[in-house]
Amino acid sequence: MNAPRPALVRPLPAALLQALQQALGERCSTAQALREQHGRDESVFDVPPPQAVVFAEFEAEVAQVVALCAQYRVPVIPYGAGSSLEGHLLAVQGGISLDVSRMNRVLRVDAQDLTVTVQPGVTRRQLNEALKHEGLFFPIDPGADASLGGMAATRASGTNAVRYGTMRENVLGLRFVNAQGQVVRTGSRAKKSSAGYDLTRLLVGSEGTLGVITELTVKVHPLPEAVSAAVCFFPDIAAAVQTAMQVIQMGVPIARCELLDANAIRAVNAHDRLGLKEQPMLLMEFHGSDAGVAEQATVVQEVAAELGGEAFEWATTPEARTRLWTARHHAYLSGLQMRPGCRAVTTDTCVPISRLAENIEASVAEVEAAGLPYFIVGHVGDGNFHMAYLIDPARPEELATAERLSAQMVARAIALEGTCTGEHGIGLHKQGFLLDETGTEAVALMRALKAAMDPLAILNPGKIFGA
Image (cartoon, rainbow, N blue to C red):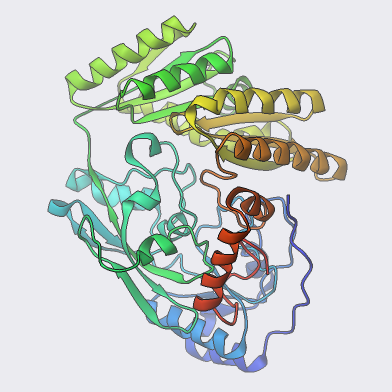
């Protein structure tokens, strides 16, 4: 795995700082506590904080900040909710952290067209709260209450991806500020287009290296008539994954299909006092009409029973479903509490679903042999799972072991015709594996696109493929 290389960071030009303070007043700060807050995410990297933090409230301010940074050749790193797992927001070359969390207005809801336009600081929970009175919802659920700008920048997905897709499929259009401080508009509210290059998809997943997203138009969906959740326990992970695979291959339109291993169950039991059986579990959700949901559930229950699934339990009330899904969303923090003072080296891979059990079982065998505490959660309906290695930050040998295991897991996923990251992104952590996965020609093309759009290399430098 890649660690950020130390960079020679020149002092922030006094003229730039003065210009930012004149334009934004107290919303431009060099306070140490604020800088440190914007210099840490959920990764294990320890990097000096940005040299200043700027809070933008309008698109014009984003453009002004980027233009000033371009004038003085100072890096600018977009910041949303700070929930990144791969070091995306770290100021590895110094510069300005551009916080867009205050740009958090829902600008337009077009219920008839099933679209909504938002500013980048709107979070998924905030959006769904605003939409529920329209009978609509936004399905992308990465677990954390991330901002939509950050979710688009990292091409997030999450628990609903098996039915509703990822941010790639749900972003129709964008507005972004390019490296010269100009506002660029891409896409439209139309469901499809063949007009020129697909600049929207180019920005989705670019991790802030090609532009700062200032507005998004996304698809939304009608709230289903009926929703039902269920849990089922299995003798081993292979049986749980095989159940998910058969359900998908049968064409059952399951909305969510999540795996938690015994360690994750143990953690959420302790955190949320659930009393679940401590063995591999599928947590599933069904959307549709009353009859459709009942039919889906019957099929899944029959498949699970044939593969050793037992203790099939239903959660049909909103309160019961919320309790289960809250526990799933708490799995990361619950896991950390199983080893007080630890940090998590978290990695994700995605493979063709037919190879998922193979990838998970081999990864479990490796971590068990190494003796490192861990837990697993996975969006197994689309072949994606997350391994969290719990390390003592005072013991560098544990970090080295976790990185070795993570590297083995990722290399295996690529060998199985999968990807080094299903939804976390490349950031700082997986730059070498991007080369392994896509090849030198593809990475060279990415570098050329970066150089063409950001010739001064000021937009989130050091990410995806390094300097």
